[in-house]
Image (cartoon, rainbow over all chains, first blue to last red; front, top):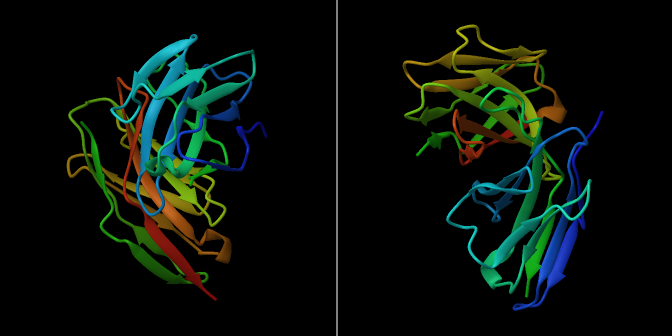
Length: 116
Length: 114
């Protein structure tokens, strides 16, 4: 069964450093998403991406975040200058993007980001 | 804005028994979807079941079923014949019809007792 994959599974970085989290969505999906989950808290939406541009973004997704689809398979989340409060689990998700206004999002296993 | 409330931070069930996890939500949308996701200790988010708000019939997936009460904005998950592998954090979520962002509840930690 097709699945969303994410690398790395765990990333440790120093405060102020740039990190890139990578995701490979399900191959025939058209919508891609990033969510984050700070330990012990709710899963929060960051951004959705469609047709090579941001479709929706939350207040959390400020100028230090960016997303990109650098090739036909990868979808990345970049954090330019990491802060301690960026430590969280980051989930990538994808959905088919059919004619209905919404469809089911399938999640990857997550990348645990630790900022020291 | 949508809100999702899960009032049971923790639940436990005996193996082979049935358990119901509660979820209420609030949305101004008329067309929306509701989801239950499972997060085992590996922390991966796994889709359990989904319900379209325009459908009156409750969704079922094997041992998992929902009780969707649209007027009450309630969306509970029933797990029948509970198994040890069902132990996980369960999140209720909604996706308003016009946006593709999921809003999650705070989760219910389910323990299955042997």
